[in-house]
Length: 213
Image (tube, rainbow, N blue to C red; front, side):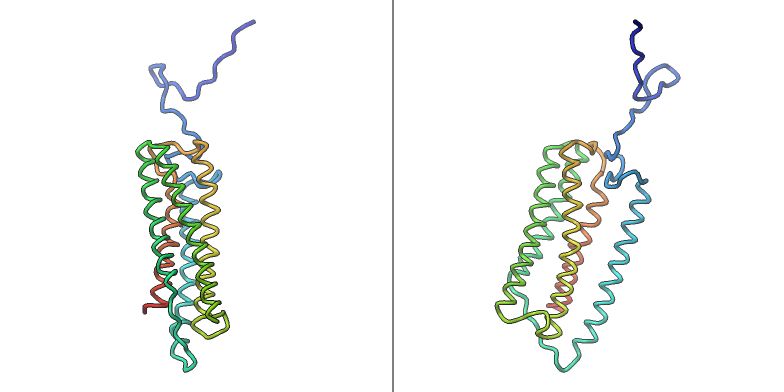
C-alpha cells in the first residue's frame, strides 16, 4: 500500500519551500467579526448602521430641544447612580482597548482577561440602568409623569436595547477568543470595539443632553 500524499497547507515557492501560511478564518489579519464576508463589507455595513442610529438620536435631540421650551416642562434630576453608570461604561471601553493591545501583542491570556472585564462592566451598566429606573419609579417618576421623564425613559431604553445587542456580540467574540479563532498579532476585535465605543460615547452624549445641557 502506498503512503498517503500529504496535503500542503501553503503553496510552494520557486525554491520548493512553503509560502505564506494560510490564516484561519477570523484571525488577526482582519476584524474577524463576520461570517464569510470581506472585512470592508462588514465595516461598511457597521458604519451604515451606526449612521442610521445616529440620525435616529439626532431626530430625538431635535424633538427634545423643541419640547423643553413648553410650559409643562418639569426638569428631572439625575440619580447619583447614573453618574456611576456612565463611569462604568467608559471604563469598559478602556478595558476593551487594553484587550485589543494585548491581542496585538500576542498575549492571549491577557486578552481574555481584559475582554472578560469589558463584558462584566457592560453587564453592570445594564443592571445599573435597571436600578436607576427603579429609583425614579420609587420617587413617582414614570414614563408618562412629564415630558422630561418621557424623553429619559425612551432614550435610555433605546440605548440599553442596543447595549444588549452589544453584549450578544461580545458573547460571540469572547467565545471565539476562548476557542482561539482569532490569531494574535492582529486587530480581530476592531469592529466590535467600534460599536462598543460608539455606545459609550452615545450614552455620554445623552447624559449631557438630558441633565447637563
